[in-house]
Image (cartoon, rainbow, N blue to C red):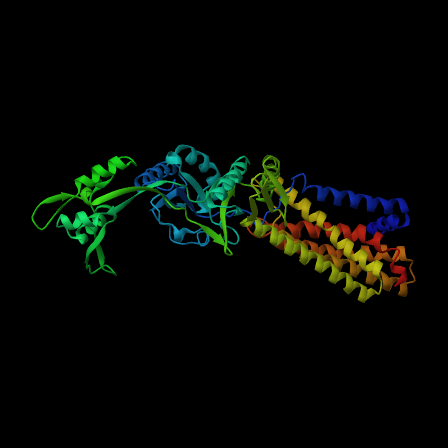
Length: 550
């Protein structure tokens, strides 16, 4: 057999054997270098092509519902031009109906006039020639450039492919002597994040200061004017808040329909000023028990105050979230760049210290005020997942090593089998590189890719065991030398091994184009193909010095 002669010639020649080691080492090194060179990128799960996405609109605190409506109208007008969008739902002053993405994005807590959420439905994936995440990427700059009046923050929210999180990248800011100083530091972090090309929809989830007016009733004047206190409260509520005065019963309605009463828009002030509010209150008049009309301003003192901020905490520690989404990129790469910028740009005013993982701690050089920066969101899920899967991979290698030691009673041979299994990572990585070249979107090394690699360890170990056990039989029964036995065993076992490989490749090809399990399919395809070459070339060279000791 040609294969048997070829393998025997390699085993007989030290130069050829060393050449196998060198080629394997070079390929392994090149595969590892794909990570620092960003030829291949890692991500928890790739983006999901769905039939819907959301838009969150946040104006400055204190903005009116009218201003919020203007922004959403502008967004709707811009979106309606796209043929892939079928319908749009707008929720003013409240969050949308909770879905998978909104469970942890605090939609249920939204009740400000400065907030709105929108649900955008798309055509089915089969009826459009662009994925939802690419469509969002193309719509985002146009909408944000056109509709950011009143300093509106417009965020595009995709349905997550994995666990729902507050955002792709979350920077949690702890510490500081006050809310104001903590918020100021959060804005410094957000400004650095805005400098990253692939980070979008950046927002600081902290209340901004704005002026509001409090109406204080003068009880002495109310008593002297013969006006009932309840009358004044009612007119204020009817004018500005509105009240339910009755209900309407309808046969087709499941519940009673409330009748809501509120004055028309003439109650609204033209500008946020005390003078305008006084003019409006003068137009609201009440009749006392003597039939005289008295304007509301006569009983009211207007106080100008600053709205108290809304404080957020986690684990009983006050904090502020700075959130960001990624535009067709993994979270880790813009974060690493932003982290370097944070350390370089802030070291003038702060002592910067690295804490656990990627987190940082900052101490102001003059005031000694300390801030802790902890990264969360999908980024943390990704890191935790890769650490867990990496640990599982190492444990699998260790268990197989000891299993081979128990079976063959030889540490060196067991190490060779484990090494041959580990080398198959070359096929996994280069398969992702090739797939990335032929696909329009970035093909990431995902969590499912690592699951596929872990599964390959058992397959590769079995291939090595088949060759070793058959070589042992040939040496005992046919009195062949170790090189002849290994060459004949490898050539003989090549057919069942290649049949197993092809079966795995054909089965895994069904997963290759799947959004979530594509990484698993490509890992199994590339890993099993390279495992065949490893079994035919690398394994014989590794085991030739140890098999004679069995």
